[in-house]
Image (cartoon, rainbow, N blue to C red; front, side, top):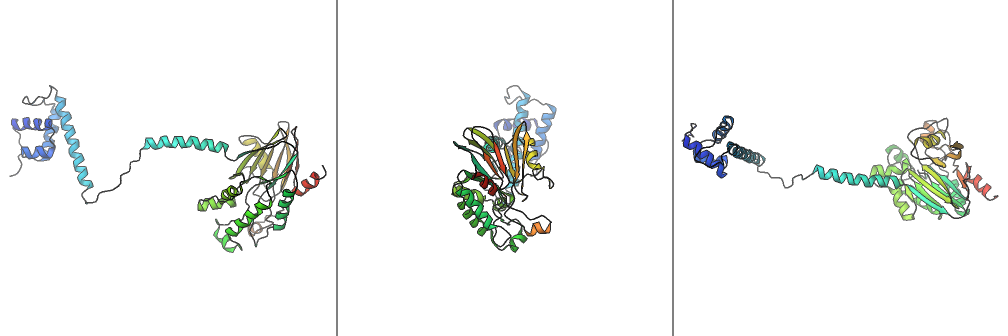
Length: 370
């Protein structure tokens, strides 16, 4: 028998009673022999009309009790339908996303604080020499790669000179290996594998003995981290117990109570000039967060040294050369041959006094005659 659509007073009273007792729309429809849509329509009409509940049922004297109860049942019915849609295919998920944006944001805030603090201190090193003077040689762009125009003999001899000269120390300014994993064509044409280059670089570090103060990575070194997610240079530094930082180091060298600040970077993305190689160092002094006494920036394979005055103080700007005398890239684009210079600085105790040399060999010659 088809459900009836007309409503009697007794049916309306029973509807109110069933709603008050918590029955859902399907149960009410069966009890009243009406469709769920008819029940829902009746509830909506009563709500719009503001009709009071039946006198046969105690509703605490408020028409809103009926409306709230009807609304709850309507929501419950819609939720039941939604669940029906979800399971209509018979497939049920085993995992639901419990991502809480507020919780994740709080976690991100805490991690951000830690990362900011780490960024402020990473790459900062201090070393104290109670006596002096001392000398620091800045060496960059070895580009170790057997089978290329790389001056291995000069590289070894310079390292041995620093190791064997009392008071001399080294800072490595990046691009120790060619490591062309980023450029497939260059790696295919290379006569040595990156693994062989890293092995030789590790041996090269040992030639210095205990004379390396710190080292940073260059863009060629960083390709391993960018492509493979592994900072291989940091692993070598950890194994050799060397101070290491990616891209930049800020060093405070104290000699007999006199402090000197050094900026060591492999490259800078702005301020570069092909006509004035030290321009980038001086602009970096002016535009960066803090000044320095000695600034050294590698990467361009062009040797240069300049003393400049800032706020009444003598400062030095230097660009190391490269042990990679030339390369197919340099030849193709018209860059001149490089020379390895390793700019070196004497720092004295008791007073702020810096003497700079553009070549480590000239510095050792002067050192032996001091």
